[in-house]
Image 1 (cartoon, rainbow, N blue to C red):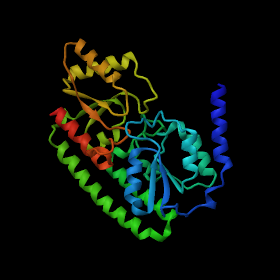
Image 2: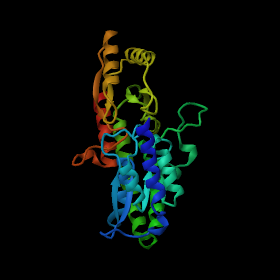
Image 3: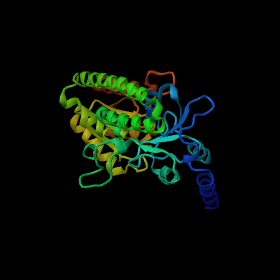
Image 4: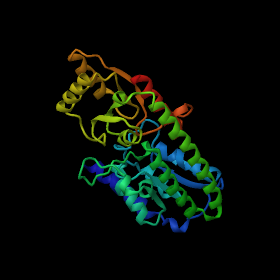
Amino acid sequence: MKRYIIGLFIIAILITGCSPSGNNSNSLNGDDKYRVVTTTTMIADLAKVIGGEYVEVQGLMGPGIDPHLYKASAGDVSLMQKSDMILYNGLHLEGKMGDVLEKLNDSGKLVVALSDGIHEEKLLTFEEGSNIYDPHIWFDIALWKQAAVHVTEGFKTLDEKHSDQYDANLKFYLDELDKLHEYINQRAAELPKEKRVLITAHDAFNYFGKAYGFEVKGLQGISTDSEAGTSDLRELANYIVDHKIKAIFIETSVPHKNIEALQEAVRAKGFEVKIGGELYSDSTGNPGTEAETYIGTLKGNIDTIVNALK
């Protein structure tokens, strides 16, 4: 408890002790680039595409990091305070960073939530009648396009001088996203409707399922902070056996033990289901791989899913 209190005290000092961003807003760093801090790897990739040559992007979470469980360190808070703009997902994806982001916003820092650019009627809820929204908006390309537009407006607020270039970068990116959408539809069409069942560790793929015609079932809830119970495991195992599901999937940012336990539960019922591969759920792939970008990540996912379920 003493260590926890000291940690909160340090964060409070970092946030309140530094001058508001209004004193250094719209100022370039030593490399003549704006400092932009992002939470997830998907957002870091988006910021690099839209910001282009005018920004230096620093992502807090690397590949394979679970944003649901991520806690901001004192170094993270210092990095955000020194930045010119902060981009984050919102909808409680970065649940353990909420207070820090709110305080930075209140201090005058330019803080942009991508989810604020999404039309509310397009958001999925945790369950019918719930007011808790699913934060995994990047899995529906149409929503990611809205987020890209919102981020572009953030850059134009930060740096009005280069607004035309940010708009040009956005136009190029939206065209690339349209191509990605077409690619995913083409690959999904290779599977008959009855084979479009996606079973993963947690409910990260509901937007993907709605957009591309997949029934999605996760062993855990929307957040990996929840736990899968014995009844959840048994129920899903029965579903796999009854529907003769060919493959289930692990995720790069979630421990594999639950899916492996599910596979064993299915085997105990006399049916074999394979692990069809590893999907990128809450982060992109490693640097130097095809999946290090948002576009590469979604292409990699659809290829893995279709190839395993055929």
